[in-house]
Length: 294
Figure 1 (cartoon, one colour):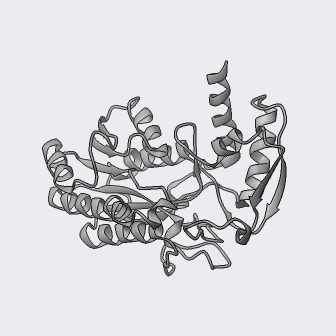
Figure 2 (cartoon, rainbow, N blue to C red):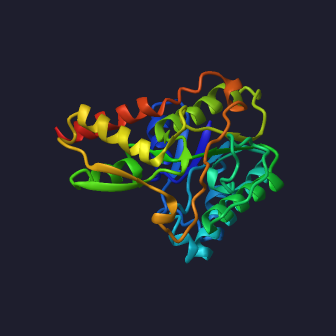
């Protein structure tokens, strides 16, 4: 298939470009400097010129706190660009795969969120991502929207790298009342490729919204503790900071974060083994980082 990928320099987009390069598909991939998603006319022209057979949108405005001020840019990239992609995909009669987020929910539910639970974003970032979802659903029946959370990986900025950069601090305060499931970026990319190869090409995939995250629920505090423990085991750091658990109220941010980011995986699980152990993903990431230092 001829696949058009947006967001090549993002955490998931980078993994998709790497893995698709090893496949028989023809991949056309773009980063933000090559294709500016705030320029909707340029976006339309390029997609029409390339005539892909499937579009994968891994691009997003992900600066959650900045989005509170840069609302126009956030909405353009997270909502208007997906709207254009969905409309073009509809005219071409091709599918669109789009990556979304747990931030579309208010985070107040006790259990895991289902795909059809009521949404209620608490931040501009969440609002823009929800708008993108709604534009796609309304414009294109042949869509797959994958909501994920707490993404980390070898490429790009993420919580794991932030913790490693702070490993020399004697003490760190980490939020302990927000829970979710870390998700390894390569696992998301592998899922998307499996959906393309095994289900979309065979026409056996049910279109719609799916949740996909790591396998185990945790808190930011406990996640940080695992990161430092494994980093020491892999000899990336000699010592780790003393970790202090704090409530969200003691770590105010411009954008509100969901207290509960846990997403139910029952719907996506019917397509086979999820291969979503975030602890295994963390090991693989740390090995890659160690190899870079050798």
